[in-house]
Length: 277
Image (tube, rainbow, N blue to C red; front, side, top):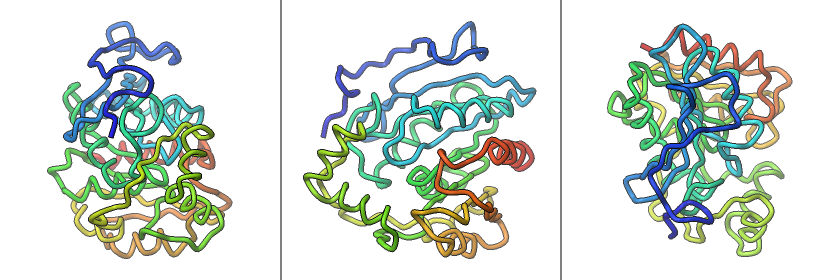
């Protein structure tokens, strides 16, 4: 498995992020490659917020085939920057990060590296906000409880269980991941490098992880028009969370970052400011 950023050698540099306007730390945002526990280089971007909540940082975990520079990820970052500082990053196999995607398994190591970096920048409160695959990753990462280093968790459009094929988009995704021809489409058509090995062992599912998140505040968000995962997925997650979790079912919303309206992202920002401690 490659561990260098796509197309060039791994390095531990910090450089300005030129696409972000109006947000700076010591004159410029920070961009660097972080090393995961298994040696993969993760392209990561830190942007100080414009809100009074200087002690709060949001770590945004994108969905499958996304990356830190995708327009929908940038839109989420711009909105949440009103509520605190923001870290975006590209999961392994995505964007400029190294390695190959394991579609939610070893991505937990990517998130752990980024959360540790965000905490090391001096923030007293860290909240993870994940979408689709990223939503499953933030749930599994937070299952370490306080040891995860997070103070609030938001999972948007996440699956509750693995290997779901009940919708046409998920059947297409399984073809993309499991077939050599699908992985070629992923690499050259979607800029996503997918590992050819199947999970061994199969990681705990999101619904298995959720009960271990308490007492960290947890918000589960799902659209009632989600074409990938029907409403039994968020309801299973909410049932597993019990009293410490909160479920928002959003009328008319589809799937993940692309479908999340700015008003919803603002409500998520308000929820995190209120709950993270």
